[in-house]
Length: 215
Image 1 (cartoon, rainbow, N blue to C red):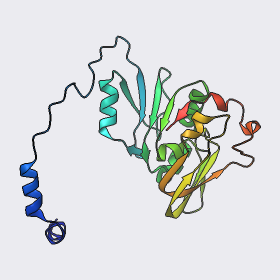
Image 2 (image 1 turned 30 degrees about the vertical axis):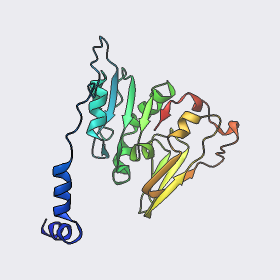
Image 3 (image 1 turned 90 degrees about the vertical axis):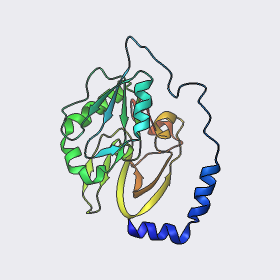
Image 4 (image 1 turned 180 degrees about the vertical axis):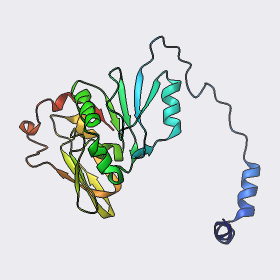
């Protein structure tokens, strides 16, 4: 704290900032509530995977879902047996699945239930580490490879420096690959499975077009 204070005093015009702030007009009153009032008899049920592997969520996003009438159900991909059968959608946040890769791989029942639910049409929204979990495998810095959900035809290889990835969207699965069009600021490279082609519809495995994943 003392170091931060010294840096602020050295590089910021604190008196000027205080003067500008004191002269700022009051914020306008909102003409409508931030969240609409929703009264749903049968709210949608959204699964939120939140555990040691996936914990990066903006509280405002979760609050907005609830205010819009959703019922949030918190799940654990490390030790829960399976997805609840009555979910309407699934939200996979960011985190560090690479540091929990062995435990995630060990919970095969949960991975299988997620993949089968996606193949059955469950909408999935995934971010960052959640996207990695949906891939085929994660290879750790130690070189060990662990199986993941297998929904995306990609392997994620951890490296020492941040990477930026831009993945094209094949014609046969635009919604699926929108999830992985650009993945940045993570220390991994993305390796498509052998035979994967953006331009070849035949490269899509059976059922791939029915998987409603986005991100």
